[in-house]
Length: 133
Image (cartoon, rainbow, N blue to C red; front, side, top):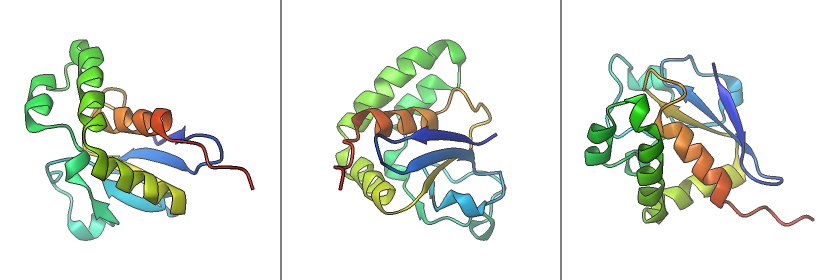
């Protein structure tokens, strides 16, 4: 199931979806946010706008987490710290949000405990609202 996050007042919404779901016209820009290419997905079927692997969790953090739900809280804290110091790819995503709809794509099986969710929440909490015109 696809999920939506409001990215601040008067900003476009970002979706998070598994890369294995077929592309949708509502996706807008489709950005893969995994460090590793997903198994069984061709570049053509992925229909990506961008593969932004630099915004994914570090290999050490990804391996430590291992998609263990009991590590979720600590994973979120550590990944947010990585995002805070990784400004260039985060700002790239913010710029994309200002100009079009955005879908963050991930390969993890768990829709609740994955880094794309943390990234979408991080963008929401740290984005400045657009000024009213």
